[in-house]
Length: 175
Image 1: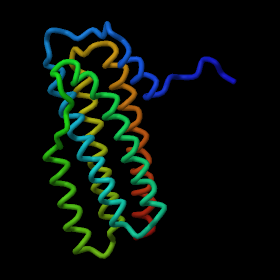
Image 2 (image 1 turned 30 degrees about the horizontal axis):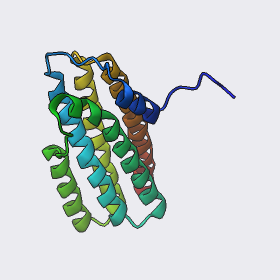
Image 3 (image 1 turned 90 degrees about the vertical axis):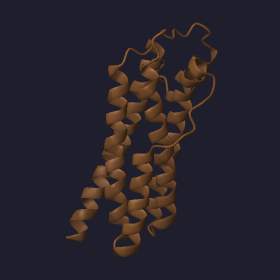
Image 4 (image 1 turned 180 degrees about the vertical axis):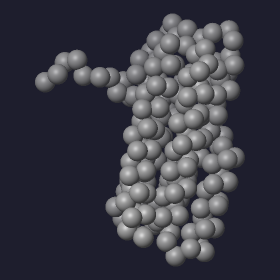
């Protein structure tokens, strides 16, 4: 067994919770991008759960559920930095992601291919999440926070690549 296993997002979250010496810079501008990321993740969780309910394919619904759970863990990992700095967690949603969710729902009602509609819109959300991670990483954020944001970005990248692969396969089947 490998004793040098890479710590998980959960392990790093526990380290943040118990680390009383988390270095938080006086300049809190980094929180704007961190809050944006958490709001977008919150909306993405709701979007994936809604898509899970609307698609008839149980395998695809399971994928949506797995990604929603992965994003819930990402939010849980990021919240301590927001709570530590401002005193309360970020629980809001991203307007852009919410708008895309409504758009996808309307299209799914009109179009005959609900799965393809959700896949293409969810893949767009993945692009937005990666962009928000990159913006957060451009800021002067605490080292511990940077480690978590990098892990969150890696998790989002895995979901993005997974969704893109499913979308491309589905588009090939549709044509």
